Length: 580
Image (tube, rainbow, N blue to C red; front, side, top):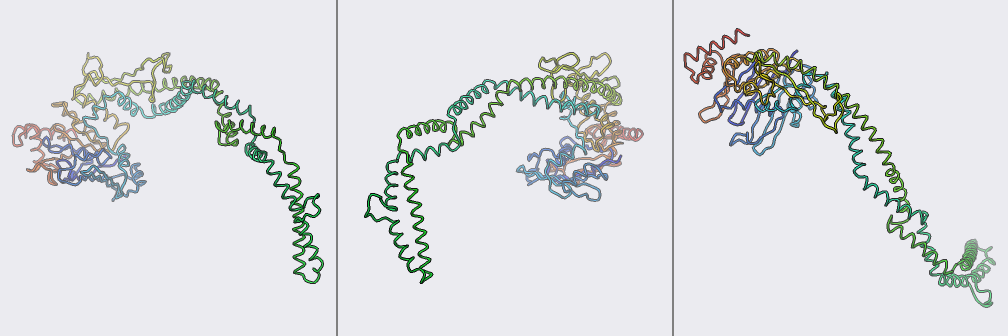
């Protein structure tokens, strides 16, 4: 399988590095140099390229910003290429160019394949391109959650499939439990709400308002309150239009209009214009007659009964009492009543809903217990294989008698789920607590690696775990920062040998201070400062031949020209070449 390869990085104004280019080998590259020379800036630079946190304190003093550029050769069809192209990136002769800029003020910019992208896009690519391991990663392995995640990652689909089913059931159970808890804990509030709604609905039902009734009664009250004035006005208007039958000499509008109409009718035949006017006067007469008739009827029908007015005002008072509490008008009151009736139905159904949710919760707990049991069994099977593989690797890392195992346990919890006849605590990842144990030598009891492993042993366990992962879930590039901390002698040689073997299937970059490890590298890079304390373009160089022997001698004895150290360095290189 063809994997991607980190070919080179250019680092400018980052920490002690002024301007340097790091050229990497497709196989095993060792980065060495004096303490404080800036070796860890290689790790920091790669972290920035892969979406790591931008720390403005890393910007070299006096510089406006720090820039890291990387070139990664990508195989055709790689998923990382697809994701990069989705972000608008373009490959440069089959290589992906990545750039990260960090300003002294803290601003950060990322570019991928010539396009500006969010930093999160770089982080997405990181999981597929590079596995970075340093002292902080070793500390992370001490966390139980990380150990369980490592086991699950190794197990692959054997755990991922039941874990996905478990996760779905777990989320459903949490949702049901929250809904049930909400109903039960708010039972008193909901009962109070129901009582208030019933009171309001009963009050409205007692009044029995009709839609628009408040408007009708307001108009009627206004009319009844001015009945005498309205009747007097209507009578006077009728008399003016149609006259008073008792007043034989009175002149009214109807009589005058009728006289005007007769006068024009007598001569209308002589002029069409005058005939049209006569017709219009005739229409006026008809209209006056109609209005006069309606006025007479209005006056006769007008009810001036004070009892009716009292009844209307009493009804209006009852409606006003409702509008003060439940709405601006009767239409709003009726709308409130409709909504409240629906809400009351919901509240009255709480008991039934509690029964339904309780039954669903109990069923989900049973289902979750079964899925958790299947997940535990899958983890136990994978743990045996994983532990055996890591133990075998430790044998190649100068720990031939060490034994690694996993303890998979559960915690009893009466509020949990039943698994294997016990009620145990559960969470989003199952019911298991997974802990990696180490017995460093025969007769030693297995102990958690946090307590049973020294710094050097922990480094080797970390490396062994990663080597096992490389066989099941390969990553194109591995970057180890001080993975050999606390190790020396034969163990250091074995670590170098194992890293070289890992480099046969992946790119391996190691920041190291051990010559036994560096000797196994396909390429060795030296990071060195100039007299002013900075690392310039010439400060990161590939060591070959005599230069490499001198650097290994320095690492061995602190003396580049020591004949003994040189002999030992040449011996290390020869042994490494023979092992390859």
